[in-house]
Image (cartoon, rainbow, N blue to C red; front, side):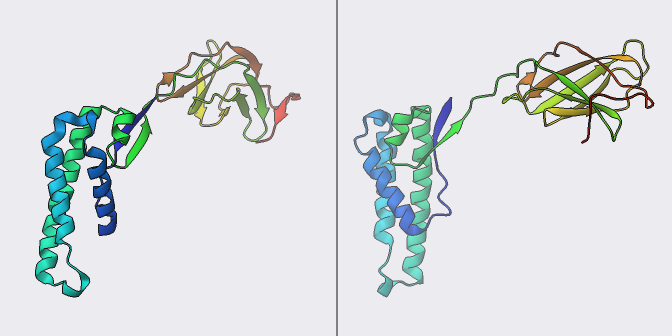
Length: 217
């Protein structure tokens, strides 16, 4: 779900852009039926906007005095434009139609959260050459940011062995060789973690044994 807001940063605008934005807000807020409770604030803003525009001296008569007056009027105008914008957002409460009717620039941001990833299926286990370890993988989960592998050997010191990766392939080393192992995976993101997958049987052979399912990484 997306939330709309007004863009109330004006410091990087040129004066011409400020004038254009002010004129757009005056037009958008004049007789705007969505914001009938903001009549006084709209009037105050409109007055400040017109005072700023009227204070801009012609190039041939510009001097330090009238430039200072113009800058003071501009500061009041910008303060009023921010204040009105904040009042508008309080009334509109993210309503896209209302906010777009104001003449302000708008922005949409997503406030939806990814769901907790599903428990992975289709776990595969490979043996790697260097290092001599297990490479555990599962299909990609579009909601996952991290993949975690666990290798269990009941009653063996050091078990379980775990590791994680941002990819679907997780290398797990330091495992006791020559015994039956139970391998599982789970995935996680900022919303939480999935459950552990159904276990897959595996065995890391003794170094002297032939290996049928070996991969290089």
